[in-house]
Image (cartoon, rainbow, N blue to C red; front, side):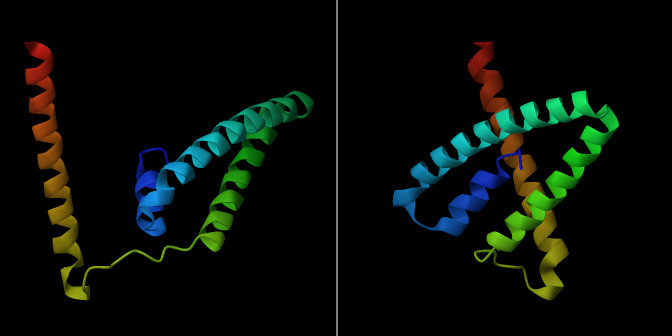
Length: 114
């Protein structure tokens, strides 16, 4: 979740504005420590075994981490679109997102081109 979806998910699921900043700060610290630990661990593993083995272990570890995340923190705040409206809702979200990006691009272009 590197696109910011994790921040949106945590914010939506937590539903406690007074705690969001602390939770996101803790998430950032955990992400940094996880990155450091992972780089060192898999570097050592690759040195001791082979690069292929380290990549394989990294892939399996990511799957296990994803499964543990889903099991530990199920999504409860999601409101699904009605059965007959899922595609229409998806297209509307895409259209609105493209429109917002286009507007942001125009705003950024005007701001930095002056």
